[in-house]
Length: 240
Image (cartoon, rainbow, N blue to C red; front, side, top):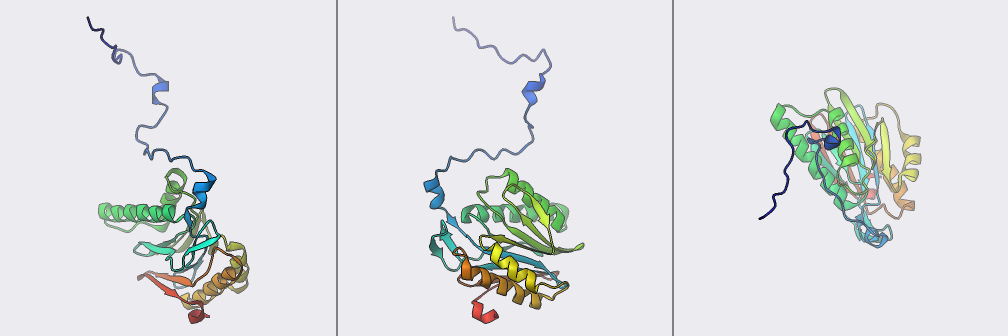
């Protein structure tokens, strides 16, 4: 005669050990282990990205270069800033695949929020969401800048790979940040217009491109105002 397998005992209350994990927490699964050889093959933006708050809104600037391990230029015309909100934009910093997936995820959440509530997500809420995803999601080696405008003002946030979110009047991320910061802090002034901030950001990106092998090949500028987001690509000679 076949023996029956004992089923769960519903006659007793569940123990605390059986509920160690949150049943409502999202499950993102696990990522495969990466060897150093695999990491070298990942397309990385290397990059220099800058966010500046202004009297008009926010200016975000990035270079255009993608590389393999920082040693070989794999693409010379990468748009590293994308609109993710009606009045907000995010940069791509780190692995290209991770950054692109991060942007798609945030853009979808922003659209869902608007559809469900009938209003745009605030920049504070969006920055918190971005930090939570960076910390807990399957996004490999990212360090973006979020810039946007809402009813509370003009905002720039840097988001680190561990999910830390820091707000500032201006910020720089990427492999060229040490050189870019020097130029930016020398030229930055409070209450600049977007036009003035564009020139400062372009000079900072160009300075980084002179020394950082992961940055170069031109510049993308995003003008963010209460009217929306405008993103255009330029050669350095067109701006400086």
